[in-house]
Structures are given as structure tokens and as C-alpha cells.
Length: 214
View (cartoon, rainbow, N blue to C red):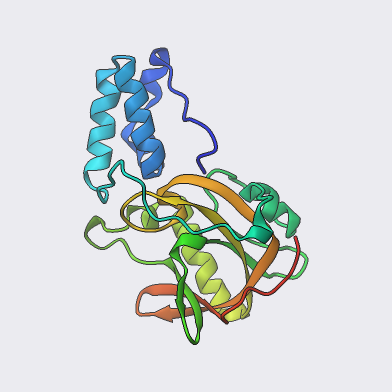
């Protein structure tokens, strides 16, 4: 999540390898490039350009954002929200889901701006394959972890979803492609099921979030 800036120090430029850059999401990678350029670290700038080349293009103008409900003005961080549901993420900056040890329930973050609403309820894409570079995040360790949890959720049934609010970049509407992350609604948790549609995994639930205070 992007609550702060990704630090870059010119004397540590040799630490930035293509493999390490590949693990960054697009927002952090773009910010690293900007910081490296301001410090004249041409090698790191070139590495960032190479890493960004295969990713969906994002532009600097404001993207879509979900309005934060009045009841959810006191948003909290994603890590604290998961802790409140009994899950301590092993990598707070990259994990998007977890399994609660006490009962085996899977808890996932749901990016509020990406929720699709119909008369019959709501849905959101949780994971899709990286076809022709369309979803590079899906191939990252965090993306593969999300896929594994989706498969597990198909077997276990109902999951819990944490509503994350923020603002998108242009491009794929998802938390890992966010311009700004405001935080998680601490008042409500969504009870949903996972459906497999081809190679994609979707969260589906009724029209209203189930009121379960964190």
C-alpha cells in the first residue's frame, strides 16, 4: 500500500536488480524511477524503464475512486484490519489475503472501486491470468498467493472480505494499481463466496455488506 514514499538512496543503487524490481507493483516502480531520476541514477532509471515496459500503461490524471460511506470515515490500515480478523500477514506490504488459524476461514481484501454491482448483488475479480502482460501482478508472489487462497476458498465456502477504499490509476482497477489507499472500513466485513469463471476467480455476494464490526 502506498501510505508513504518508496525510499531510494543513490549509494545503494547497486541493490536494485531486475528481479527485485519485478516484485514491486506499478505505483512503487514508477515512484522509484522518479526518485532515481532526481538523483541522477541513470542505471536504476534504465532498469525501471525495462521493468515498466511490459506493464499496462497508467497516466498521471486522477483515476476512479469509490466514495467512502459516511459510516466509514475512520478508516484503518490493511494490516490492522487483518489483525482484527485474527490474521497476521507475513508480508504486510504484499499479501492481500490470509487464512485464520482458529477456524480456517479465508479473509481477503476487496478493492471498493472495483466492485461491480447489479440488481442481483455484487461481484469483484479476485485473480485473473497474466495474458500477454495484461496482469503482471498475477505472476508475482502476492498474486500467486491470492490465487492459491482463491482455490482454497472454492473448497471451504464462505470467505470474509475487507473493504479497502482509495483511488485508482487509469488501467486495471485494483488495490495493487492504486494511486492512493485511504484505508479499510473498520465497521463492515463482506461475507462472500468465490466462483471460478474460466481461469478467473471472482468474489460474489448479495447487494449489501454483512455488518460485522472489526
